[in-house]
Length: 138
Image (cartoon, rainbow, N blue to C red; front, side, top):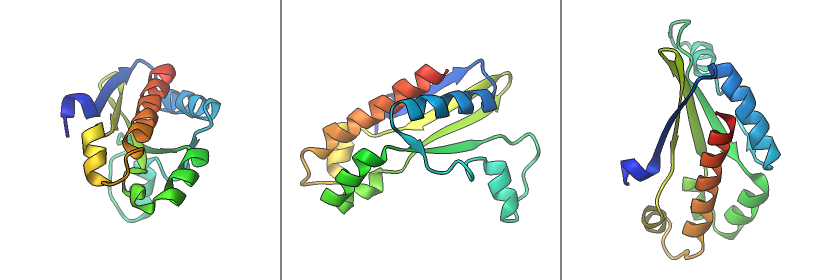
């Protein structure tokens, strides 16, 4: 893994909730979905399961998926599933909303799912699209 290439670190002047709402609209525009809308607020999720976090804890873990691409991909090769959950992390720090997104390079993808030559480029395309959607929502 190459942290400089694979970890996308950006920020927004929008508040966390506004960024999330705008990101959700962008995601829908490109036929992606947010799979975990009811559990992405980690303060609520942790508390629901007995965790203790302060009211100021505002981490959201947004799972992004494109079902019309994932269905074909996973039907073709279920080994790909290990790289399919794509999460965009959103939280505040100071007066900025922080956005983090971890993806993988072509070599890492090929190593994790060997003998599947079409997958690295296809997945890299999705990783790049998620980054552009983040930028559009910022």
